[in-house]
Amino acid sequence: MTHQDLRQLYIDELKDLYSAENQMVKALPKMAKAASSEELRSAFLEHLEETKGQVERLETIFDALEESPKGKKCAGMEGLVKEGSENISEYEEEVLDAALIGAAQRVEHYEIAGYGTVIAFAELLGENQQVSLLQETLQEEKTADEKLTELSKDINVAAEHPSAQMSEGKGKRKAGRAA
Image (cartoon, rainbow, N blue to C red; front, top):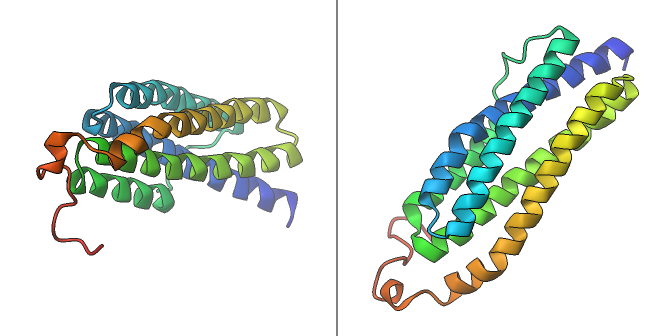
């Protein structure tokens, strides 16, 4: 792979991440609205603000590269967002919160992998300032994942032992989807 080929791959991967982050800017408010746990709702809204900052960092990188961030749709994130959205219509309350955490963690792991990749490319290309910006985002994604893991401890227990109201019919898996 020539230096130019790696640079183009780097730009393409950055465009993919830019699309992914913008999809999350739209998805996180919906996830926050669907969450019944105040802590989970707050975590989603906090990460929304971080995600907006991540988009700005990517725009800074594109400016430095004299490239447009537009032109690529992240199909991977599109699929993850779609799966997460399906949970909102299939589950309720504590079980929905557990499902939202699972969906959000899949997103975080996808982003962690993507940022790890572009950091490696940026290092090889000698883009040290960009490496620093990308590492800042990578750390935010890892922290968000850790926070979700921590929240899941109580939320998963609550989902396993739903409230009396839920055991009377609310929160049971809705019909129409195979187990």
